[in-house]
Image 1 (cartoon, rainbow, N blue to C red):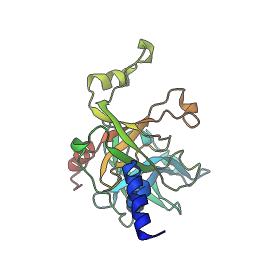
Image 2 (cartoon, one colour):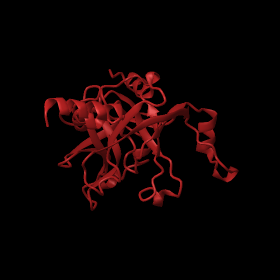
Image 3 (tube, helix red, strand yellow):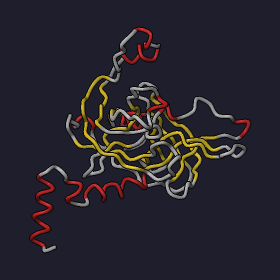
Length: 255
C-alpha cells in the first residue's frame, strides 16, 4: 500500500467514526493502563483454591494503594484460617497482601494498601468535565478468573449522567439500601458499555489520554444475575472519580 493510499484509508476510517481502527491510540492507552490494573480478592492458605478473585482494582497515588468497590470486599475474613485481603497481578497471578485503609459506603469505594514494590499509578482526571456522549473505555477482569487473570477492555460512551438510585417498578423491590440511595442520591455515569461480574472496581478512562474519570460499580441486569453472562444488558454504571479524590484526601494521599 502506498503512503498516499494509506493516508486516504486512514482518513476515511476517521470520517466514519472508527478512530480506534485508524491508529494505535487506544492500543497504546490500554498498554499504559494494564500494568496498573489488579484483581482484588482474598488469599487463604488452607482453602482450595487458595486465591479467590472477587473484582478489579487499580493503583493510585504512590502505587502502593489500590482503589476498588466497597461491595467487592468481603464483610468479614476467616482469621482463624488465616484468610486475608489480597490483590493479584495479571498474567502470572502474583499475590500481594492488602489491607483496607479507608472506605466510602455511600459511594461504594474502598482504598487498600498493598505490600511490595509500587505499581504504576493511573492518572486521575476530573469527572465534572465529563459530558454525555463522551467516549470511554474500561479495563478489568470480566467473569473473574474464569477466563484467566488477563485484563480485558470494553469501550462505549457515557449514555447519561443520572442519579445513582434506579427507580423501582413496585414497592416490593424497595429495601432499606434502595431507600437510602433515593434519599441521598448523587450523580453517576450511566454507560452504553457491556461489562460483567468481575468488572466491579475497574477504572473507567478516556480512550486517548488514559485519564481515569470513574470506577465501574454495577451492571444493569434485566433477567436475573444468573443470566448476566449470556444476556448482558449493555448498560453499566460508574462512580465519578471526584469521589476517589475525596477518599484519597481523607486518607492524606495525593492523587
